[in-house]
Image 1: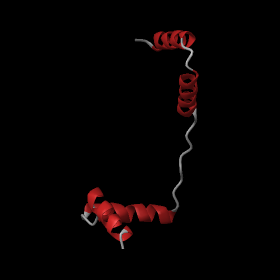
Image 2: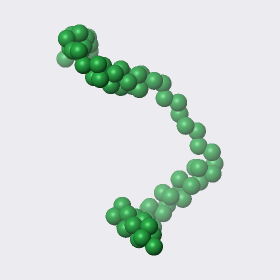
Image 3: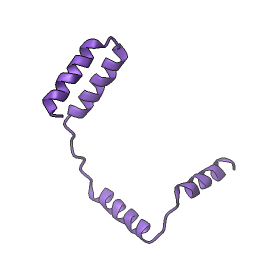
Length: 78
């Protein structure tokens, strides 16, 4: 289906619907989709921390999600 066909079908469905919540959600979604995303710039300290973390992962110096959750649970129960 071509883009113009999809647009026409969406417009038709919108015109037939009376669901205000759906309109609000759709409007929010379209606004988020159409926003221009600004690229986040990292400083040297942040870049260094990322490099260090990647090395730790590569060397297996990390926890699984289950291990991390277990350590959190244990520390909260103390």
